[in-house]
Image 1 (cartoon, rainbow, N blue to C red):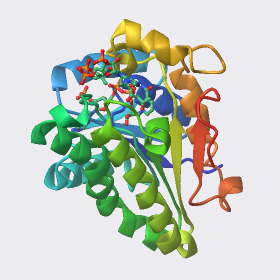
Image 2 (cartoon, helix red, strand yellow; image 1 turned 180 degrees about the vertical axis):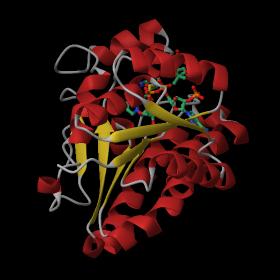
Image 3 (tube, rainbow, N blue to C red; image 1 turned 30 degrees about the vertical axis):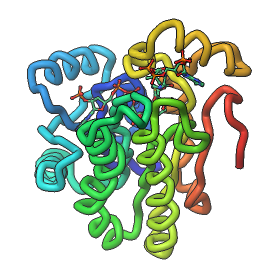
Image 4 (cartoon, rainbow, N blue to C red; image 1 turned 45 degrees about the vertical axis):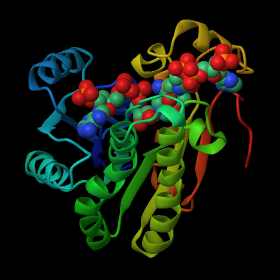
Length: 246
Ligand code: CAA
Ligand code: NAP
């Protein structure tokens, strides 16, 4: 297929790095954001050693101004963005009766607010060019809820509501909008869960293990080719069988 320009937010993280490698292996030009330039340049050098050039721009996805200037910077470097993966995300786990306004607001702004902040500056160009792919990285916990994650589950469920509305508005412009809902993947985010709690979670996964970032990158790649043009508004679970709800 034609080479496209792809922006994966939070690309320096575990799942984001794998998505970037996968999209690059499909022949696309790839880009992401950073907040800490020193950390990001070291990561960029490691990605280059793995054979992939990743364009970088400063950007905080929880801010509309910052996200817009990040998009414009990357477009100057690579050209218009055809593929957007809204992947950047955080957790601030605690039971709801202890949750502070900051823990609520930060998770909603970073996981859900980011969908507005980053998609808004790319959507008009996609509509003009009559082609686009927008993929939200939600979570199994947006589908089933999770003890200690009222903030995160609300944001992740909201991401799929965003997907199915955008999918309807943009289908006739050649743009598909889909969600990937990963289960527990062995990145920093999951390794931050206390070991005892994590072991109990792994015991509930039918495959008997955590997923890998590469398994999520594969799920994302499924939505990109021209052959996937009929698939829009879908929510693809990739969770080792931990949750099989519709
Ligand atoms: N079901 C029922 N009870 C539970 C429970 C569960 N899943 N988890 C904890 N509890 C109970 C404890 O047994 C304890 O009970 P007792 O008071 O009777 O002993 C009580 O809840 C503890 O409640 P606290 O309010 O004191 O909570 P805490 O400060 O100990 O922390 C927690 C609780 C933060 C939720 C902690 O259990 C935790 O980190 N859980 C993991 C949450 C999780 O899955 N996060 C996913 C992070 S990765 C990610 O988000 C990626 C993704 O998308 C999959
Ligand atoms: P990760 O390794 O912690 O990576 C998160 C990435 O998001 C980092 O690059 C981080 O950049 C970036 N980020 C966080 N806040 C940001 C902000 N305000 N602005 C810009 N970038 C920001 O996490 P991961 O496991 O790869 O998770 C990636 C996505 O998958 C998240 O949306 C997560 O919720 C979702 N997910 C993960 C799992 C899992 O089991 N790991 C399961 C389901 C869904 P910094 O380095 O600057 O912080």
